[in-house]
Amino acid sequence: MSNLIRILLFSLYVILGLIIEGFILWLFPFTGIAGLVCWPIAIFLSLGFGYVLIKLTKKSSNVWRTLGVFFVLIIFQSFVQLVTTPQESGVFLTINDTKNAYYKFDKIEVNDFPNLSRGERVVYIYKFKSNLPSSFITLTIDSLKNDDENTNPRVYLIKNIKGKKHFDKNKINIVESDTATLITEYYNKTDTSVYKMNRNFMNIGSGGYNDRVISIFIHEDNLKFNSGMEILLYKILSWTKNANH
Image (tube, rainbow, N blue to C red; front, side, top):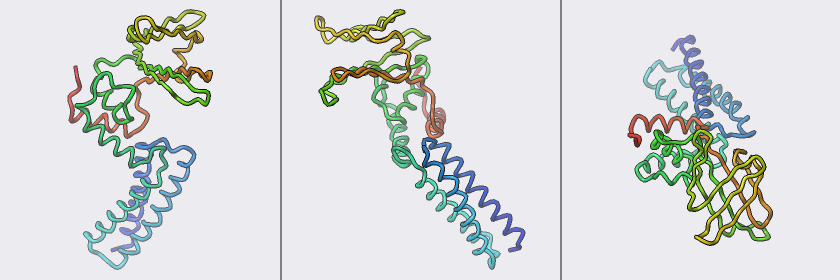
């Protein structure tokens, strides 16, 4: 094999290794500060395995053997790059969650939203895309012990449709005024609790209040995708599944 072909093969290998790293970081962007090591690792492996490739093929002109070595090295390198990609829940746990969510498509129901995993959330967004609100607000009210231990969390799902909030009025009521937000929680027909929050409480996106007796927390989900893995799952669903209408 000529030196020119070997140099081109080396260059192709290095470029492909870096493209794969870019794709991995698109799939799994939540690397934090530790993610700064991903590119140096990818560059080191690409240059190192690329050098091994041209050395192994120096005395061989067999095209199929060369291709075999090329793909064995790039697959092994891709695995190493994947394993060394830092993720809060782990890369392979995220992949497994995505796979399980795909196969749970038929089991996910319209009222399941607050309890979904990240992959299941994508399935939900695709499955019910024709009836989605502008955003979902999850309201969690919890009684606490003195040591901040949860004792009785209650979760309420609120639909934000063009700035208007919709919720189950048999369970809660929310009144927003210029001075305060009043949240009324109904335990039964006669037993209720009223919580007075600041006037922007339902619009803070994520946050809450805790006074060691009661904890009130909200989280707004704007139904956007935050990673390439979520976008990829949504695309696969669009190719293989029919959304509800």
